[in-house]
Image (tube, rainbow, N blue to C red; front, side, top):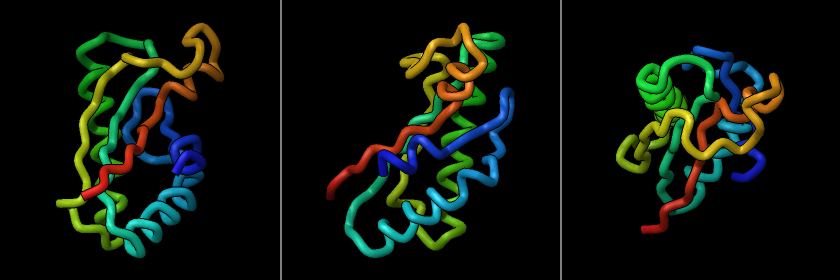
Length: 112
């Protein structure tokens, strides 16, 4: 899942998954179909824009990942999602590359 997390990408201001995210999420769906665990999806944004808009965007990003996995056959009851806006950046928001890394959805395994 660590590799998948690094490959879930969004454009600035968007909750639409980039095509480059599909292979990683397909692997996640395959793992979920073969194993008994749930996922907690946490959406984040870079620091561009207003805090309240970023919070809403981060929630939509997490929901985009959730919907993708549901569309791949994963039961929605196995997925929880929330957004946290600009909280917990993983890279420097002062650079373009850093902001791109901060536009993400993290996946956390939840065992039943």
